[in-house]
Image 1 (cartoon, rainbow, N blue to C red):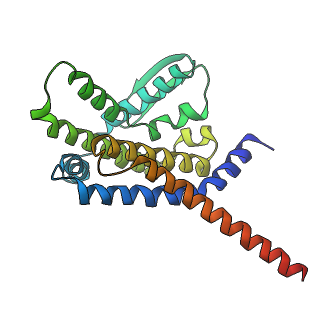
Image 2 (image 1 turned 180 degrees about the vertical axis):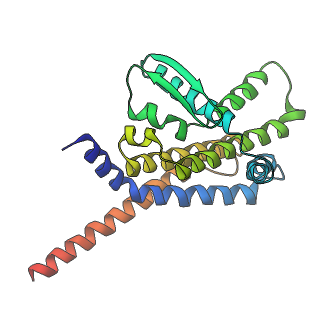
Length: 230
């Protein structure tokens, strides 16, 4: 059995989890809207990016830079040598000593700019009182997260990505990308709206939905086999 087929089969098993994760993430967003307590800065920032792109332009060079840097960071964390990085207006390339699925899919799963802004925000809060500017920074986090999601979808939709092939095929890659981004979005909501959502409940819905589907599939399959035997 080839590695690509094993990954396809693994992704097939996770398909119910993908639908459960999408539903749970949408419900988490709805919970935040209901119980945000008037602090809509994250949600405003999140909604502003698509409007910015529709009205002005797509900041492709900035996205490509973050994309290639995320490849390089994932490679470094994996103990892989980064030999060179090149970034153009709408394309880029990283030369590595070797490749793996984590490195190939990292830019589609990890919002680098969101992580950097969050680290700066929490790091600076140790030294300065940022409460007067908190809404601005939280809005910027939402804006950067939407930037990541919108341009990731655009990159996957508009052109064939060699990273997807390297990772093990489009089906496996999309399953991993969707689950990773649902997790990232849920973590961001929990970080800034800790009293509005329960991360345990969100992840629990992933498991409950998955278990329900496979329980139903097992029961249906057993009844189907029993009916044929009869």
